[in-house]
Image (cartoon, rainbow, N blue to C red; front, side, top):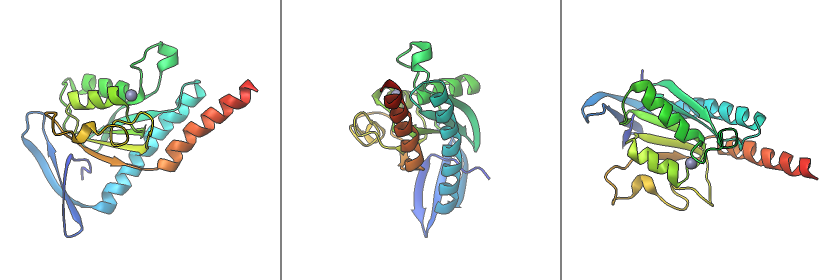
Length: 190
Ligand SMILES: [Zn+2]
């Protein structure tokens, strides 16, 4: 059963989630419990965390992301800003670009982006441009987060596309990989 959808409405403790094809036609509809959704969200966030741990080993700020389409991981990426000397090489930005190449389309309303840290303005902007269905993130980013902390790009009614956001999935692990990285870096400089 596909567990990833982009619109959510609740009824009797079950959530109806509808997947949409890129031209706005309904592809499928299913009723799944909130527990099933939470279980899938944790499973995919673990895959994003694996990417974050790889980034740490490469000396990059450890942030990881995966893109899931119809229950399958179709792209995974990690922050690569230092290695690529590229200010756009954020994990979720790279993962969305990969997903578009994989699906050979720029509209991704049937995709959910999992990322360990709340996206910045640039990445939230790309999610808007790609018409993603949903974003799930781990740790909030009080200083730069654009999906609830500083800005709420996903729910800004002035924009022509809004999308669902679920925050706080495995947030402790997602925050810990970052704090451990910065602690180790401070330690090595002393
Ligand atoms: Zn970003």
